[in-house]
Each structure stands twice: as C-alpha cells, then as structure tokens.
Amino acid sequence: MAEPKNEEFLDDIDAVEAEAFADEMEEIDDDALEIDQLRAERDQLKDRFMRALADAENARKRSDRDRREAENYGGSKLSRDMLPVYDNMKRALETITDEQKEANSALIEGIELTMRELLSVFKKHGIEMIAPEVGDRFDPQHHQAMFEAPVPGTKAGDIIQVAAEGFMLHDRLLRPAQVGVSSTPAG
View 1: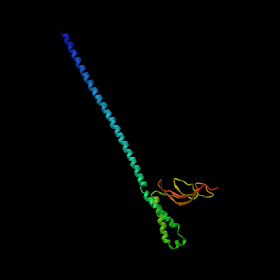
View 2 (view 1 turned 45 degrees about the vertical axis):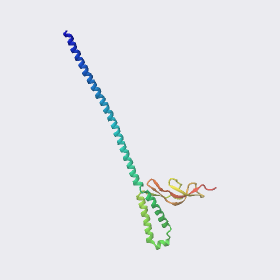
View 3 (view 1 turned 180 degrees about the vertical axis):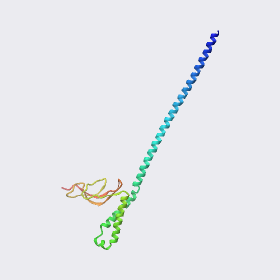
View 4 (view 1 turned 90 degrees about the vertical axis):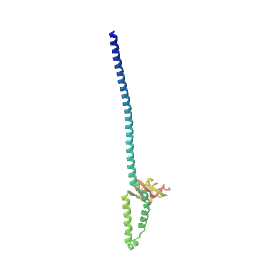
C-alpha cells in the first residue's frame, strides 16, 4: 500500500510543478504583453517626437524666410512713394537751361548732388533702375505700354519712346518702365 502513496506524492509533485510552470508561463505572457504595450507606447512617442521636430524645423525655415522677406521688401511702400521724388528731380534737372546753370550754379549743383545721393540710397537698399532704350524690345514683365503707334522702320513690339524709368526692389517690380511701343507699321 505504500506504493500508491508514493504515486500520490509524485502526482502532487507533478501537479505542483505543472502549476508553477503555468504560473511562470502566465508571468512570461504578462511580461511579454507589458513589453509589447511599452514598445507600442515608445513607438507612438517616438513618432510624435519626430513630428514635433519636423514642425519645429518647418517653423524655423518659415520664420527665416519671413524675416528675409521683411528685410528685403519691408520698405517697398516707402520705396514706391519715393519714386515720384526721383521723377520730379529728374524733370527739374532736364529743364535747366545753360543760362540758368551760369546764374544759379550752386543751386543746380545742390540739386544734382541730391539726385546722386537719392540714387545711391536706392542702390544701397536694393532698388535698381529699369532704363530701356529706344529700339529695345517691349517686355511686359518690366515695361508698361503707355501708347502704341505705327512707326516706319520699326517692328511691332519695339520701344519707340521712354516716358519714365521703372524700378525693381531686389527681384520684385516696384514700377514698370513706362514706354511707347511700335505697332505693326501700316503698309
């Protein structure tokens, strides 16, 4: 009868071992599940971090571009408002006669110096003059046609008169050059 007791004892050991093994497996499954959850959370946080970095980089680039544009083009309204001053000074200098030059040489020299200084300030701030010549081709990107007239000896689209110079602020048009353009000659 002793043998059945030994078998019961062995059965108890097997049951205890099976139960311990099951507990270990359950703990391993719980640990594996927790590790998988932590990995998913890590991947989600990493993705959010990478997106935040990309957003920050895009914001930096956008602010750099906005700063450059403000630096280059922030004064465009003032620049545009200064163009009539240039036009008036140019007209004044063009109307001076030789007699007036002799009689008022100091005044005229002052006007010429002021004109040179204005052009120097324009250049310093990136304002370039568009000065087309008679005979150049009309370019709608830089010229404004004030009138069209058939002129013998010209081709359609040739500039026949320059009414006013145009101006660019860096790569933007402040004012187109105002020109007269030849139409197809009547034939």
